[in-house]
Length: 283
Image (cartoon, rainbow, N blue to C red; front, side, top):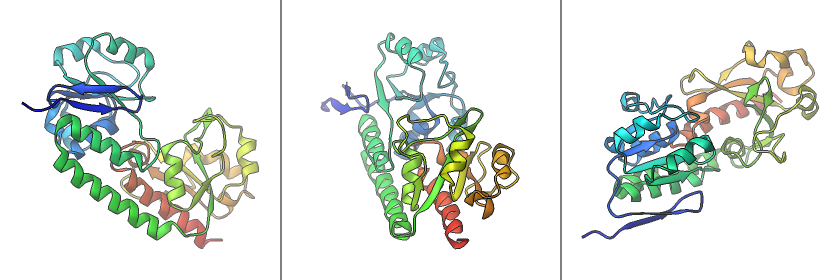
């Protein structure tokens, strides 16, 4: 008889399964991607809206959104493991879910190097460790290549716009900021105390970023796109003396790649690195 599986999650809780999970629900698109990446796609029985990669994920039964779950549907699906995005899912919904006594495992990669650990732990919970190990190796090889290629390049002052109204960004403890660092960028609001600070237009102008990035929420393929005519960035065109505007360094980054804390984050990094490299060339 196989030994029980015991794994610690990002909430600091320890989960023990008597046998590998066979019926898994993922409460974030990135978590569904991670399950597929480690060879557990056939074990997924439910996911939240916007879970669309790989294409098979689009066919999974929907159990609501990250903010509102259909608990009746969850119960009917009879999961033996629920993967939770620690800070991405509404806490009131997670509390309701916990009352059902279904095993839950919280994940929240905060930097690029946390993602292999998430893959390794999911692989253990599903007993797909051979496939997980291969996925981890691919990820680390790509990460190492990007570090070699961009690690020594000149710093670029970078502003990442999460949303325009209210004007939101991210600090240095968010995964996207780690992507910016990987590419040789410096997050101009990285030292802010809040994970997702709200800003004034004046504070961005004063920071004088060389590059302004935002996510293309329509996906946007796999490459960075110069976005001088993007409506969500139009406010910055009023400030012609700001470095990013003067050198035409307003960019859209594929949203599915940069906003999901999963295995494709390094593809998002490739797009960010391309944008920052363009800024270096125009100095």
